[in-house]
Image 1: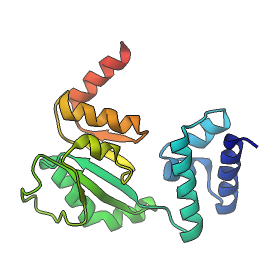
Image 2 (image 1 turned 90 degrees about the horizontal axis):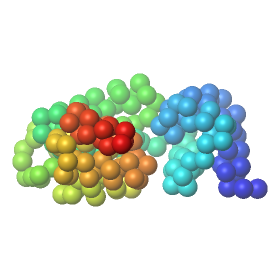
Image 3 (image 1 turned 30 degrees about the vertical axis):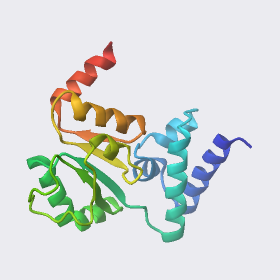
Image 4 (image 1 turned 120 degrees about the horizontal axis):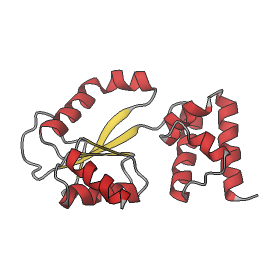
Length: 183
């Protein structure tokens, strides 16, 4: 039996065992509501993606809950600092709503010593946003550095190369990337 066939069979068994819909599985485990539907139509995800999904399913089977969604935040200016404060303050309420714990596991900015109004002691620190975006200790990369090139662009490319979802409020960067994709 091929690796893909075993992977698909494992997902179908998980859906049956836990009485989950394909959409719920896609949203909560794979990060894409259409994941199972695409898989059934022949999509073949990368081996890293398959391994991450299998680990999440295994952990869920053992604990009865999903692994935490580990967020890495690059840029702790006004927006980044406020995001971390909200997730630290309201994380339990957010977690209850989505059925999965949400934690800021890593962050980075120009200066670690600047007072941002929250505790950084439980957050892994990165001086390099590309290393943060590539870290295996995050599931979602949030880019709030700003600018259309330099560290913002390099870190987003690194996250996407690692098959990691990216969230950004950087309109200049997004517009520039969109133009590059069209060429």
